[in-house]
Image 1 (cartoon, rainbow, N blue to C red):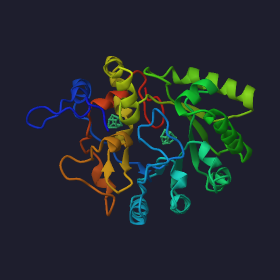
Image 2: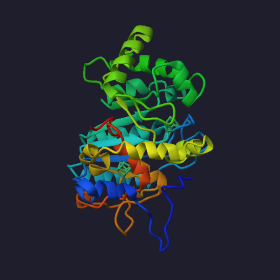
Image 3: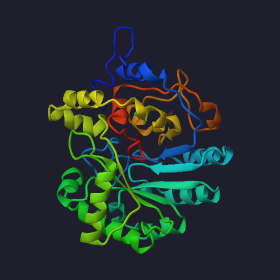
Length: 332
Ligand code: SF4
Ligand code: SF4
């Protein structure tokens, strides 16, 4: 279920779009640059069910990318040398039966592979060797850890998640990740509540000091991400009576300097069923890419997607608030 504001419809079927209007004041239409990243969401199954999850992922979800869609993603990757990176996400992507094959083939194609890793999945049956698998394939591992303290992380993700996450980080360090030797381990932090992230550099410094002194854990970079007002987080906001206040906060913090680096300008997102979106957030709201013709990954020529008009709605204010927010953290 998506947020009521994002999907409110005016008479005649039009949707209000204050975001597009704000972007137009300084940059005109929001249009894409050439696509350099293929983000593949292999499904909504996850070993966790976090309160802020924009995917509504959980162990109960059944959506899993079928084989023909996995193959179509690899075909597109092989055909377009401009696709430098494949960014594999979910759910917990590692529990997809084709996950390891997808990583292996993408590496054979010479692509940079990023994996969105929740750390606790290492404790699932048959997943204990994930750190070594990542290292053997030189994946960039992007690990979600809402906050360096146990109290804050467990409040958002569930009791014991912080401790299990630190065990996972230690296992990644043990195979060479986050030591500055080429195996890249990045952390992603997000606010535990209805507010914007703190300054990324400050939180990175504090997290580095705390994790190293308390657990001997090291990492490369920390990215801050704004909680998007969609899916499970939007429902939590509504139940807490904070939805409108949060939306106002995002809109008031609109920063036009973030617009050139919005991730939707250089990325396309593939859903588990092969449909194409401008980003993972639009995917969750089922706002498909393209003006009027829905696209799928089957036979897609990503080179034709440059300069497309990006589909936006009010949730997009989450990407442009303050220092901005993307899968790679702050952007301004
Ligand atoms: S936020 Fe990540 S780890 Fe948590 S339920 Fe969603 S996909 Fe799983
Ligand atoms: S939500 Fe998606 S489409 Fe909207 S600004 Fe962010 S990345 Fe772009």
